[in-house]
Image 1 (cartoon, rainbow, N blue to C red):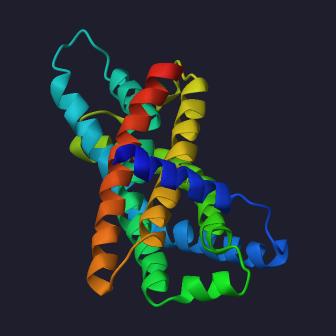
Image 2: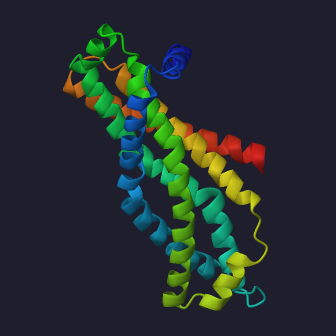
Image 3: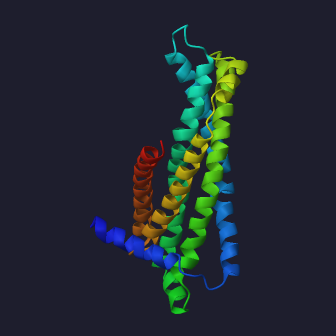
Length: 244
């Protein structure tokens, strides 16, 4: 069954990346999807990232009980954890639930109401028209959200450490700037790019091939989120193993 669905998924992607009929129409859809995926998720990602950074700072300070370890290490650990793992992965998992379920339900509803059939009868490449703008918006906006998430996680760690007294702002800033390796940001962006593709394409796949009525559309959305989350975690492990 896995190879059947995977083969069906690859055939759908082949149709998605077929040459568009009119780029002008696609351009409008891409801008709309970028607004839905990126701008529509700013508030949620900002709140989650800020509090995760603050909590991580306090937890790291709680575990570093030795007086021989400088408190600036708290900033270093929080920086590397946020860049390499927390911001890309948690952002992707949150967006898999928010964006992925929306994509799957939207396309699934169009399938059960025969709107996709109508597009195909008119000679329009339905997979390309419906899915390609979402994929392009996902691989563009999710890396941007991850960059914002990293910045807010580090900022949240600064305020969290200062308010709780775990680390002074001067020591924290010294920690996040000392020994910084730019390659870690490249790893985070690669993860974000792959995660964006997984979220949009897998959710669209589950919605595109849904059969039945409203109940099946809801089930397809749930399965799309679950499969996307599992695929994100597997891809996270593979990318980490290959790049670090």
